[in-house]
Every structure is written in C-alpha cells, then in structure tokens.
Length: 126
Image 1: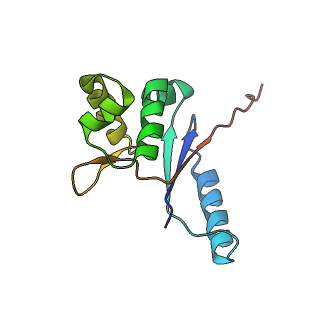
Image 2: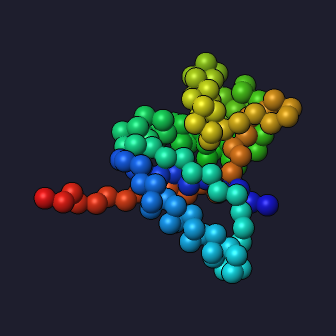
C-alpha cells in the first residue's frame, strides 16, 4: 500500500476547510473514485517555517534517501558526499518533522512513496 505525505502552508488553522476536504476525500474513496492510501499531512505556518525545515540540502537528502532506500547514517552521508555530523543534524530535524524515520533495523528511510506540496497564496481582504 502506498503512503503519501502532503506538505501544506496554512497561516491559520482552517478546521472547517480541513474537515470539508477530509470529508470529500472520504466520499471519493467510499465511491471508489480514489484508491485508499494513508495520507499524512505536514502543516507549516509560513513559507519561512517550511524553508527553515526543508532547506535545499535537506530536500536533497529526502529525495536521495527516498531513491536510495533504507540506509545507515554513515552510508547516507557518504552517498551524499556530505559530512556525517551535518547529515546527522539534518536527519534529526527531519525525524522530528516525520519526513524521515528509522526502521526496525535502525536504518534511515523516508516512510512515504509520494510527497506532495500544496501552497495557496490568497490576497488579503482590504
């Protein structure tokens, strides 16, 4: 079964909108319109917060690890041609945010088959 992560930026919590979207996904899945797959939503409050977590090097790390498959920290650092200490720092932060995890054998892995980003920019009401 595929797992999917959705990265969103939401300045304020839109509980009503989130519930409506969740209800719509449920109806589509119930009707057989969409394959049922686990969906994890990672919400950031601002682009600045998102980019402080997912810097270009960390995004490369996630993409690389997703292609590479489960790896030790040293193996990952070697394959990225980066310092082990810096990769360790990045991995620790990505684990805290749920973008990377350790499997049963202690190897690092990306727990998602697909990561989608959803950004909406709306004009403020004047």
